[in-house]
Length: 126
Image (cartoon, rainbow, N blue to C red; front, top):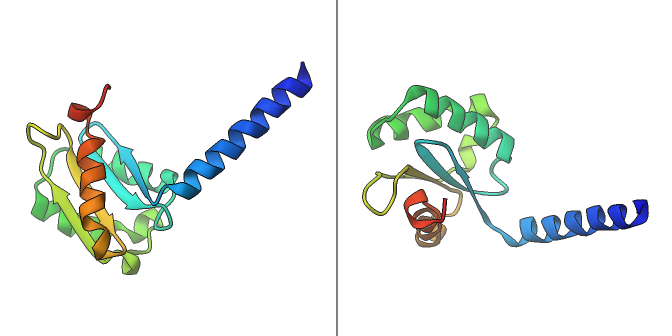
């Protein structure tokens, strides 16, 4: 029984590692915001802390978010000098949350926006 449990745990860790390595962009969400970022930029814990702070702030417009985010990257342990572009996608009928995209490579913009919109609550089974 213990051997079966151990092998299941090892297999789960293997699949999780492979899935994490295959994914370039991570999606993190809160009640108000959806954040898409490259996996090498920040850890999920760092992003969750930032999203919790954003949730406490409440809804904000794009200009305020574009000012607040770079000013607070360091506080959450995110290397702000690596962020080349910040995109804010307002919530609308296709997205229930405000989308925030942090890019380290501007050429990834189209793919990151597509992932953010596709992952929105209004487009998922949540």
